[in-house]
Amino acid sequence: MRAKAFGNGHIRGVDLMHRGIDPLHLKESDKGGLTGGIPFVLYSTVGTGDSSPVTVTSDSPLKFRIIDWHVVKTSAASGGQTAKLTDGSSDITNAADLNVAANNIVDGGQIITAEHEIAKGGTLSITLVNSPGCIVYVSCITVS
Image (cartoon, rainbow, N blue to C red; front, side):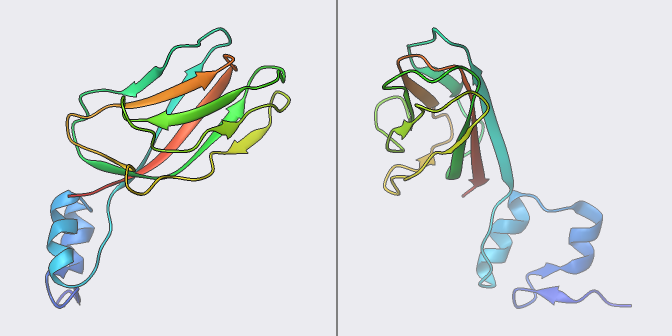
């Protein structure tokens, strides 16, 4: 039985079954009009009292795009607590208001599309104000 082709014949279904999806397949799929990337999630637990930027990844082994982010609050509410993502020099997101009780989930909000890609070798950091305790989850996708 012959495998059915995807994207004008550039990726054969049997290849996906035997080798899995990897960045090479996704580059090939661009030729056929399909686009995509390998999704993954980065996270960092930040303790109360951490007020300097927290590096999630530095010297990234691949180029990736941030597609969503959210925060799980682990400390009590305190006025003016915020978090935002940066690449070390430019803001990737607007600041999310974290003035909520512990155990709440806060949507990270707006992503600045002109800054949402981290280059291979690049850095992703979390900048906090008023040192909230939290876990920051960042959903990403590989790009070429």
